[in-house]
Image 1 (cartoon, one colour):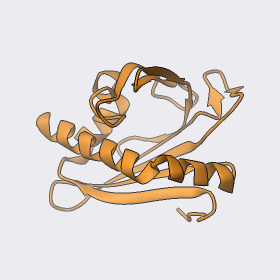
Image 2 (cartoon, helix red, strand yellow; image 1 turned 90 degrees about the horizontal axis):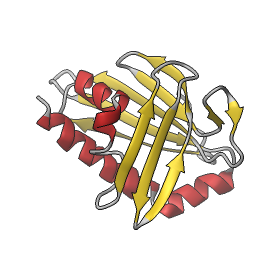
Image 3 (cartoon, rainbow, N blue to C red; image 1 turned 90 degrees about the vertical axis):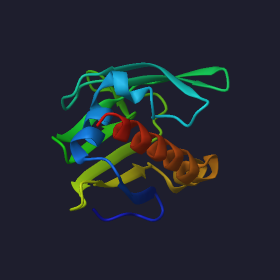
Image 4 (tube, rainbow, N blue to C red; image 1 turned 45 degrees about the vertical axis):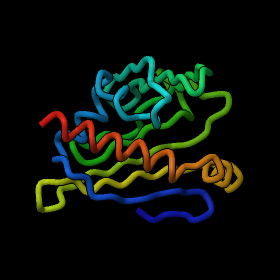
Length: 155
């Protein structure tokens, strides 16, 4: 995937959990609450319809503020790639104020772990900068550490 430095934020990490567990965590509503937002914030609800056009809806409690995020899956390659966006909601209804598309890739590291890449693609350079200023790398990095910790506990 070619990144656009004006609109894309991305990082890659090797996680000490097998790809099948990392995939399961990302595609099972009951698992999402354990890692998707940096603690002490919380995921209070999650709905997943794992198919292209299916819903990926989450509700967060961030410092006492309830945030609903509704989106859809754009691409699903079992165990390898997951793409979702808030540009549309279920039924391909356009969102009023879309923020980003997330592109997650998963591959084996050859030692039982997962090479995990998270990319946030934005519509404009301004939105990308806003996300970077909000703490994309720290926030998604913390969520990724939480994902790794949780996934390794499932072994």
